[in-house]
Length: 148
Image (tube, rainbow, N blue to C red):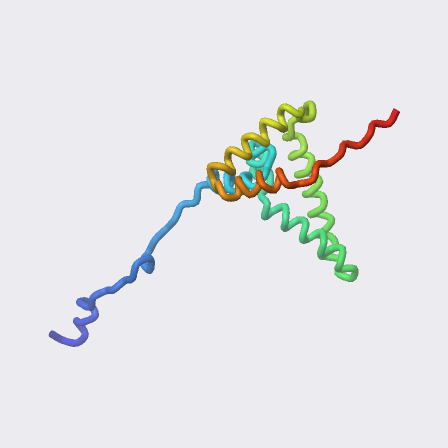
């Protein structure tokens, strides 16, 4: 066999994970991870991301801050003004998404706390027990006297 033919017959060795691969990222999974950290209304968070992503919002905030620092650069200041206007528009749109209604009652807060405790119990029992122990050893707060 001629040496130039060896190229066609040379074996290809690949280690695990070094080949061609693609991964599809589900945006619902990403949003669930972002809103799980304490969002009071995940539905509003999802709709807000449709209006302007976190990256866009952070970009506009960065441009506004850089515009405050660049006193001599007129282009940067113009970009900062435009970004501030974009932030105002997005802020109004996101505020329109937020539900308008009565503040949560003590019953609502109690139910939310109970659900959070159940989730903590299912996720990490040791952390659940530590939280309960901490709550039991915490000094009791006195409620302020009402003014007459």
